Image (cartoon, rainbow, N blue to C red):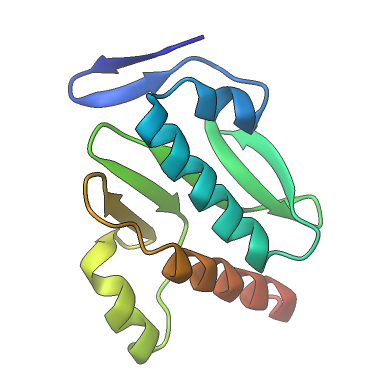
Length: 129
């Protein structure tokens, strides 16, 4: 299955695995998606993986924790609720909507920040937030 561009965005066919999703993109985007995947996985104890809402999804204890996806001009992570003020300052350049961050393709991707975002989501899940 392949990705096509419709109205300026990648539209992917349905995929059964994250590997299938990633392999549908151009090589440079594949490398970025794999690094995003690994950054998230480093922060999640015993992470699971699935495709949900047609996007790669990392799970914790069998429940969706964070989604990521490639678009024509950026990589998106969802959901990322507001954080404390100091962390929110770091996230702010990438904040696209209330619970969304976007990392522009063609610019350095802050994988360390992505890992810390995932760690925040793990902490919040463990606290029952």
